[in-house]
Image (cartoon, rainbow, N blue to C red; front, side, top):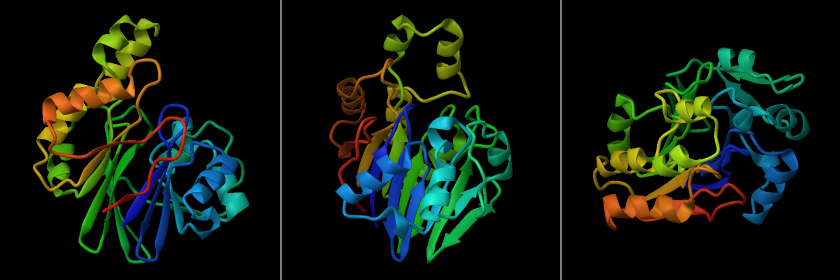
Length: 252
């Protein structure tokens, strides 16, 4: 299994996973032009993608799904409430394949487990991609460290994990009070400390952890890495899913 992030953050999200015969894109929060170009940087073609799988209805995850479907002919997988709640003008979608949160998808020999989350979306899910005995977690927009996360993490070989904000930066930053409360509330995002505590409880099966969905205003990559290193030591290689560009190719 190989994977890379095309972009990760409130400015747009998309992650590519290749396993066996399946070529999967998770989320469509960047333009088709950006996605096509960034995949080509990693010698992949967006038109070869087997399926586009949407995690939830927030614009930074779904806004370009219509373009991906119409321009590149990608079937779009999402839950009915996610489709209904999307308010970004998706346009006509001719190939939508619905699933229920918690359902297991099977795509060209790859299993995608969908995990309901308490994030403040209509029907949000996180993912575990399973193939040939390997398991990759795509765990962002989580709300809070809910119980299923602690059960799933020890089963994973690698994970993209939300590490959205530093509590001190958020508290002293420019966001209005209601938005600060939303971010650190039970339906918002995980802090660096919360993410590190989850990883610390995961055991030693993990080959790497890619920190994802970092806030531009309330976090900094160096600070996020320092927080994780302070709590985890050198137990896991840490990677970054950037807000601005395609990541390195990572193998499992």
